[in-house]
Picture 1 (cartoon, rainbow, N blue to C red):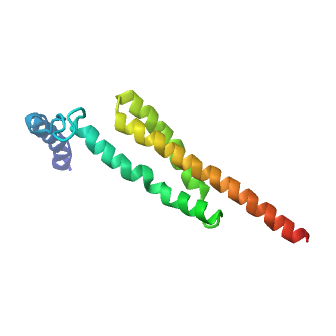
Picture 2 (picture 1 turned 90 degrees about the horizontal axis):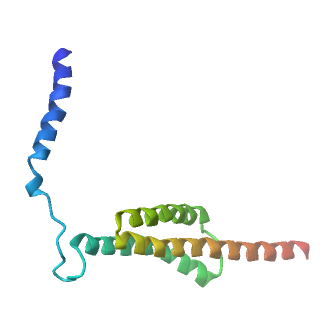
Picture 3 (picture 1 turned 135 degrees about the vertical axis):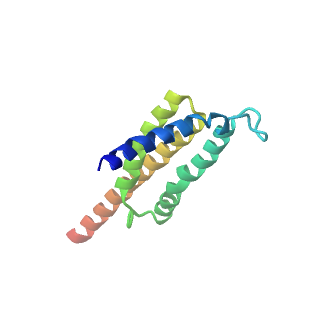
Amino acid sequence: MARFNSVILVVPLACLIMIDGCQEHLPRDIQSLFFPGLRRSEVFGFLAGLGTTFAALPDLIVMLKRRSSVGMNPRMAAIIGVFQILWVYYGLLIVSRPVVLWNVIGVFINFLSVGAYLHFSRKEKSIAASHVGS
């Protein structure tokens, strides 16, 4: 058992020493060759944000085309929208343009989805109530 305890202490220490010795091998955030005004991390951030931000857009488009809230769950969009507000704040703290930009757009899309859901579900309830009353 004592041998096991010493291994538990030695292995993490050895890993930390190895990681510390590899500083020169870490990728550097250099200026992008294709977009000289941006760093490489910002280019990747903009590309990653493009995909994740517009992932909610197909549901919104379908809801607007059908003019119906059937099959939609507003909780998902609301939860994502709330956490994207936190991402916006985080982006401001780390001064990251991609994080701020994409999450502001994402907040708008997700809350637009929630608003459209509420609008169409109210309309559907009033139509259903008028049919029940007749």
